Image (cartoon, rainbow, N blue to C red):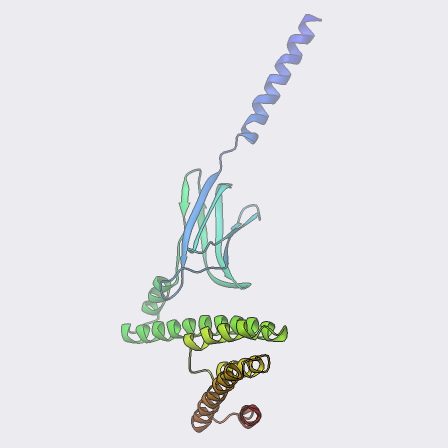
Length: 247
């Protein structure tokens, strides 16, 4: 009986020794910074670490500084991919993860320069492309912000809160005064708010502001028509003139 007990203890001890390494398996840490072709942080993205050995995938969110970080990554070989809006932006293959810290940065400006050099593109041409990319990125960000303000202003006007609409659209025209639609919508907000005024002087003031904004919209749209013919321009101008005449 005593011998059986000793044997049982030895078996349990052996089992513990075999299992312990599994639970005590060391893992690594990964981190990095993501920058676009202009050197600015990439936000709203994820970095995917895909194990080329086990098929396991870790999806790490990028913060507002373009940084990502994670503990508990199993050692091995990985494909590391930067994803933005569901699209693959760039990737690295055969990245080794050990029990130490592994740093993988995405510097698209640097990668673009290296790619251009390999393709025989001159520094002047590369600079031109980078400037165009920076300009396009700035335009996209501006359009996104203006659309958000337009949506907020439209929502406010729908509920009769014209003062909020006026404030929001005024901010939008300060961001980019070259957009005729912003001035048209601002004119609409002033025209709508004028009807709610009980003081005749204030009502006249707001109607005059509407007149000025409609005229700015008309001038901008007319100037645009001189350089770029668009099929919907006559219809838009008709709406601008109609509201101007109504005021």
